[in-house]
Image (tube, rainbow over all chains, first blue to last red; front, top):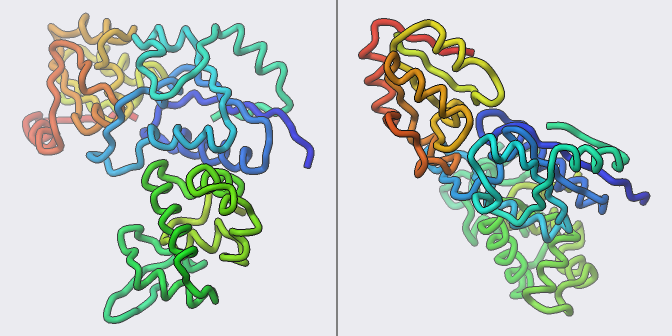
Length: 120
Length: 110
Length: 97
């Protein structure tokens, strides 16, 4: 199978819409087919990674646990936009998984380098 | 769709996967295994329990490659290989074992 | 009037539109609760409108998003029962799409 570089761009907050969860499903599918997968979190997408989600009250799955499985799927390239974090009063310490914090311009360059970019 | 077993009803989807994870018990697991033509041994239960633990931890059913790797890490390389797992679950360790474990069809399994 | 906002203020201008109507109460639910997160850029809007509006946020949605421990001062967290009380308290209410 040919391997392509896929970047999934996450721009939506979790739970309010289905985009974030759908993106994660597609990420896992791409990874299961042994593609070279990376994730970028911009705008409200950075909220997906926020630590301490307690979703019992709204009766949906929390993301936090599933981030832990990404490593098993060999998905280790997680990029987070510095400006989006700052605007929301967040830092890398507020996030549930280790990520690489980059400027929007740096993320732009990574996007340029991909074979496929999918936006959620 | 539903399975009626010993006075209890278990809702399933069109492919026979349990709808409610909470419905699962060893009795329904044994029944699902029988439907799949799998004769449950201690080795089978080990994989089933591993899958249920994995799901509890990460909330997803792992794809076969991931399952193989994760089992290898936890139970040793002699079990973490596809030959061993396919011998136990000939129609696909992830797909078939997930069904018996009462989990959804693995993400990435089409 | 009670304005119910379920969109993130960083993504959509629903909160701005509601605030521009003048006065009343704002109930933040779903992704709307991000407006009430301390330290964010949008928190300033709530602070500025504090004299004209009362602010509420649904606790289940704050908890789900991991921000229940950083709710802006002056915003009251309410549960589903509190949600119902608010809707009953105000003669009119509007869910901003």
